[in-house]
Image 1 (cartoon, rainbow, N blue to C red):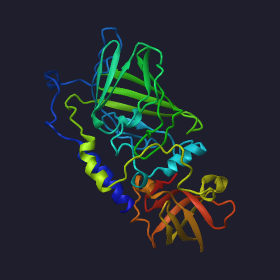
Image 2 (cartoon, rainbow, N blue to C red; image 1 turned 135 degrees about the vertical axis):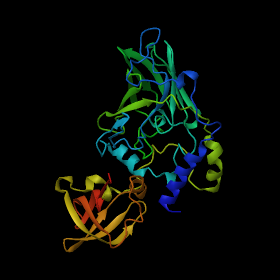
Image 3 (cartoon, rainbow, N blue to C red; image 1 turned 180 degrees about the vertical axis):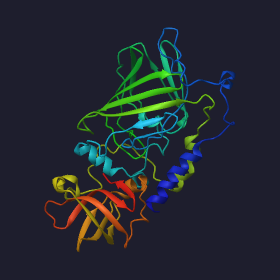
Image 4 (cartoon, rainbow, N blue to C red; image 1 turned 90 degrees about the vertical axis):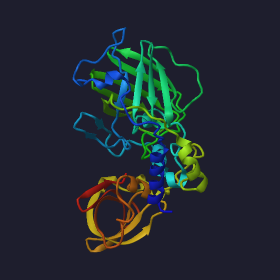
Length: 368
């Protein structure tokens, strides 16, 4: 089974998991009234902003992508590549759901960040608690907002979450994470050393701003952050989501690989030391345009021989699963295709490079 077919099966399984038990409809009679999205945000009895409502969120499967929609929904991501530590780089390069499984595809909890996309979310709130109801796998999290201290709990998928107010901003502080979750579908890692801080504001009736900062010294050399805007959608309704009901047969038949636990203890499974980034001179990156003459390998990474500038060069591209996720399919990378790569030369092996980006026609793809 090709990587692309495996990924398509995973994506299709997610789509089939949703069991539509009733047509989407207004949740209450109040929703039949026109809502002015620019009206003032509602308030709780204690005077704090009330985030209650059903919210549509941007689909952020890759936190290095930024975009804004006409209705104000947006995502402001981190620059690519993320500032990985050597361990974080290994986890990022090792991520291969078709080969090793993915916890979400095996119906495990999504964790905080991955839960915020792509399915609807409803918030219910009072003076003391805020509850996030995620349609995804029918998950929920209830967080106290009175500034209580963290508890001595075992590490878990969502961690130990405590909230407090900073003016009109709700801040949720998360510790005791188990390190199993990813920051998005593409597989950016986080470890059991992670400390997550999420901030929410409601500037008006129709919009909510969401910002998170992750401090994870095991995975990243500095804190990483992400900002999003959610849009109120009172006309929608949460529906039942049966995860294992849709996945069990696919798992039993081997349509995709079941997730069998954390890979924290794994060493590099994709690149040997000779092919890892420190083996290349990033101070001498160059753009080369040429024709693919041979695909030397595709497992566990794509390695191509390219005729550029009158000579043959060998170029390490990226794991196929990453290129496929970013829209570059294996079928497009074939002999005879003209490409441009931004690549760094190997420090000791002549005519070998590792590419940061590859361009086909007018499309450029990040490979890091």
